Image 1 (cartoon, helix red, strand yellow):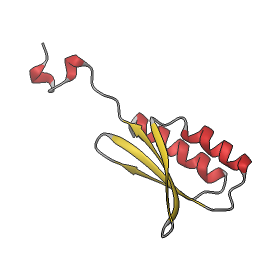
Image 2 (cartoon, rainbow, N blue to C red):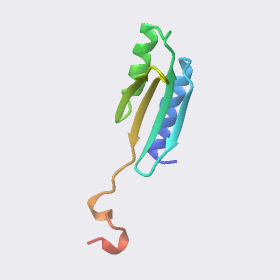
Image 3 (cartoon, rainbow, N blue to C red):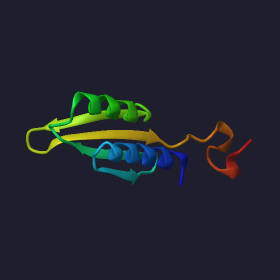
Image 4 (cartoon, rainbow, N blue to C red):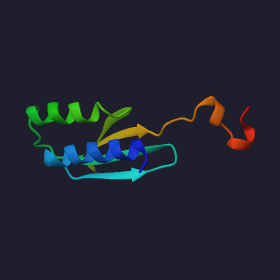
Length: 92
């Protein structure tokens, strides 16, 4: 599993530890974590959740009256070094 997936899985596990149901998805350039956030989440748990998602490259919260609140976090996959771009046939 790429390092981004390991970090995303760790974030999901820590969110689960505070009672959120988190899911991880692997994408081409990043791994994402999403979790539904209940209205009843205490201020202390919010602080803990924010500390967890702060480890990601980006995070946010989508809140709608129809679908509730969804917390998301994105961990980018490593970008190849300049010498690796284009594969071995294109290295200098």
